[in-house]
Length: 460
Image (tube, rainbow, N blue to C red; front, side, top):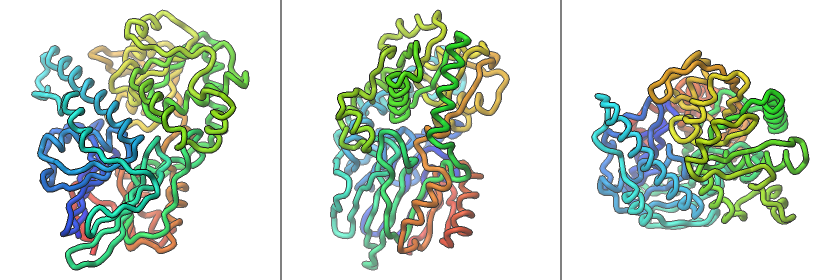
C-alpha cells in the first residue's frame, strides 16, 4: 500500500494525496497551488487521473478542491465524495476561480507580458461538468463503498461542511489498515462551527500543521483588539479594510459585528460587505444551521439573524463598490482574503497610503501573495502595475483563525487512544512542519515524518 504526497508537502497549498491500496486507487483532495507555487498548477499529475476511482474531498477551500476540473479534463470519471455543504460551496468557489483565471489571463495578455499562460486551467462550463461527479454523505455514517474500501466522515470544525476522513483499507495481502486524513482542523471555540471531532484510533494519520509552531490569541483578546481598531478608526475618520475569505471568515466577522452592534459596544459604524462570492457563501450558510454550534443555534432560535445588523449594507454591483472610494469612517469587507484579486485590490489602491486607515487580516497569508508582503512589513507594494507606499496600519486577528494552533493539534493527536504507527505532517511552511514533527516525537512519542513533494511512502 503506497501513499504519495502530491501537494501540501512542506508547503501550505495544493493539498492532494494519492493512495494506492493494490485493490483501489483514490485521492484525498485535489487542490490548487497558490502564491509562489502557483505555476505547479499547469504541470502534469504524478498519477494517471483515469485510474482514480474516488476523490475524498475534505472541504471546499480552493487549495483543497481547486484542481478538480483539471482532474476531470484529464480523464477522471470516478466519484467525488463530500458533505452536502462542501458540494454547495465548491460550486460557487470553483465558478469564482474560473472567472478570476479568465480575467487574469485577459489582463496579462493585454499587458503583453511574456509569462502569460496560453489558457486558463478551466472554464465555468467545465465547473458545471465537475459537479455531476459529486456524491454526498452525512457525518458519522460508516460507508462501505467496495470490497476493501470503507470510509467515515467526521466534523473537522474548519469551515462549514469540512470533514476528517477515516479510511479502512485492505491491501493486496488482505491486511486491514486504518488511515486518517485530518484535512484542515478548526480552532476549538469558533462562534459558528462546531469543534473538531476526536478520533480514537488509526494505524496512520496525515495531519495539517498550518499553525503548528505557534499559539493563537484567545477569542476574547482578539475581539477586544478588533473592537479597539474599529473605535480608533471611527475617532480618526479612517477606514477599516478586511480582506475577506469568502467561506467561514466572512461569516464569522459578520457574526462578531452583529454582537458588537446589538450589544451597543460599537455605534455609528457603517459596514459594506463588498464580496458577491462571500454573499453567496453566506446564503449557503443559512441553509445548514443544523451544522452550527450551540451558541449560534441559540441566537437563531431567539429570532436573531446572525448575519444582519444595523449599518450593514451588502454591495452587489462594482459601480456601487467604486463609490466607496469617496467615503471615510467606514468598514469594507471585500474579497480576496490574501489580496490576490477581487474588490479588495481596488480598495487597497484607494486606502493603502493613508495612515488613518486600518487593514485587518483575519486569516493565513501564503508566501508570494500581496497580503503576505504587507504583513511582512513591505514599505511599498505593486498593485496592478503601480507602486504604492504602505502607510495603512496593519493588524492580524490570530484568534479568528479557522485553523488549530500547536496546542490544539497536539490535543487532537492525543485523542488517539491507540497510538498511530506513524504521523505524516503536511500543509505547513517547511520550518513549521519540521518544528511540529519534532514536537510530536518529543512530546507524544509517536514517529512523525515530513514528506517531500511527490514522495511515495509504503504504509505496510
